[in-house]
Structures are given as structure tokens and as C-alpha cells.
Length: 238
Image 1 (cartoon, rainbow, N blue to C red):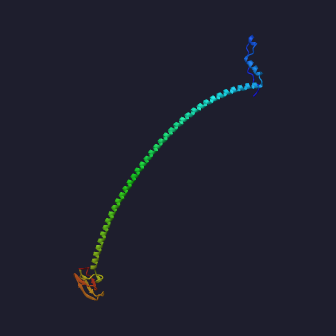
Image 2: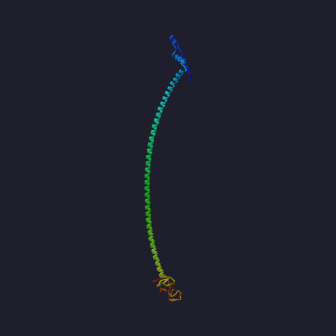
Image 3: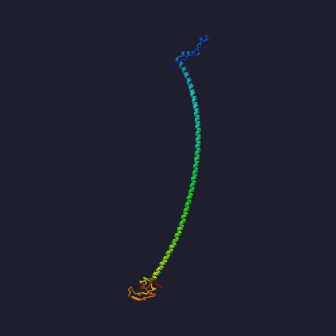
């Protein structure tokens, strides 16, 4: 900092009267007094002026900062109000969403229970239908088994009858009595060329008795004999 402070601009002087000419101007006296000060006095005066200017500038800055602080506080308060409103709306929205979710869960649970009930009912219906079908099939199978058993019994009876008929009747040929045919008396319708013979062996010359002629014929056969017949028709045991 310079020790010399430039003087203020000159002040135009007005013509003075006789009394003013004998007394110097106030500013001029101050300037003259300032010039007569030592360098450190001048420095102190300059520092005081600078301090006064700095204090005024600092006061202005502090005032501006206080205004900014007030504006900032108002902005923060507004933001806090908006944040509180937003949080309240978020809480309300969350509560509403949770309520909807709970309602949807209840709906889904109810639908699932209805679906399970319908599925169980359908399953029971199918099971009843299958059981009824199986029972009908069982009844049909039993009826078929009964009919089959009846048919088997009839076939057996027919077979036995046919066996009895076969055992008690025969056509042309040579038979051993007691092995091929049963002993007993047999009858045949006969014909004009009917021939039969009781034999002691299969040889046609070992004749016990015989017959040749037309008309119905009768023969009594004994076990161990052989019987030859030709052209007599079917012999039936009587």
C-alpha cells in the first residue's frame, strides 16, 4: 500500500468576502492537516477508511446471505412439504395396492376352491359313472358266464346224448361187441340187400348166425362176438 493518498479533486472557490479571505476552506484545512501527518498516520487513516468500506461491504454481504438463507429455508420448507405430500400419497397408493392385492388373492383363492370343488365333483361323477359301467359290465359278464355255462352244459348233454346214441347205434361195418359197441338187442330198418352175421372172430367165415333178406331186422349181440352188417341201415339199441 502506498504511503501517499492522492488528494481529492479541487473544489472551486467562490469569491470570498473580506472575512472569508482571511480563513482557509474546511476541506482545504483537512487536506493540509493530512499532508502534515507522518506516513504511519496517513496509513492509519487509509486503513480506517478501508475498514469502514470493508465493514459496509461485509454488512451488505451478510444481509445478502441472510436473504439467501431465508429464501433457501423457504425452498427447503416447500420441498419438505412436497416430500411429505409425496410420502403420504405413496403410503396411500401402497395401501391401496396392498388392498387390491389382498382382494385379488382372495378372489384367486375362491376361484381355486371353486375349481377344486368342480374338479372333485367331476371326478366323483366320473368315478360313479365308471363304477356303474363296471357293475353293468360285471352283470353282462356274469350273464355271459351263465349263458356260457348253460351252453357248456347243453353241449355236454348233447355230447353225452350223442355219445349214448353213438354207443347204441352204428352203420355198416364190422364191430367187436363189448369194445366197439355195447352188448344188447339192436334193430335196423333193413333193405332188399340187407346182410348181417354174428361171428366168433373178424373172419367172415367164423359165422355164429346170419341173415340175408328184406324188411326190418333184429339181432341180439353178446360180448366177445363180432358183428358184420351190410346194407341194413342204422342199427339202434332197443
